Length: 131
Image 1 (cartoon, rainbow, N blue to C red):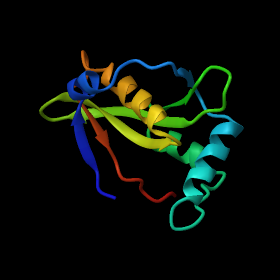
Image 2 (image 1 turned 90 degrees about the vertical axis):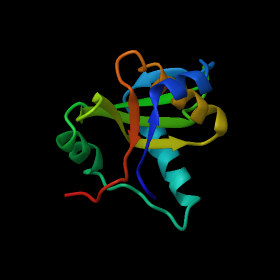
Image 3 (image 1 turned 180 degrees about the horizontal axis):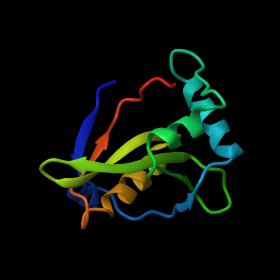
């Protein structure tokens, strides 16, 4: 997978507000969702217990959000931070983008697009290995 950058203005124009609840933080349901989604790839991939703490040490401003329809389990998980950018000032950095369906993905893109007044782009980064 290669990193890529997209304009937050484009995300704002392309994706609208949805009926998803957005909650800060992770929980057991998030871990289960990520494990289920990872198993659909070329084999199961489970993040080790140290992953969240390591990611927080590496990226001090990282915030994780779960996306769910009211009363339902999450179908999307987004971890995002920001970094300085030479020509833009700042940009969003997407560290995790886990989604179980197209509606959750659209809600997550819309969430990123709402940052357009302050941050010009979102950078979808490749995951790097741990400690």
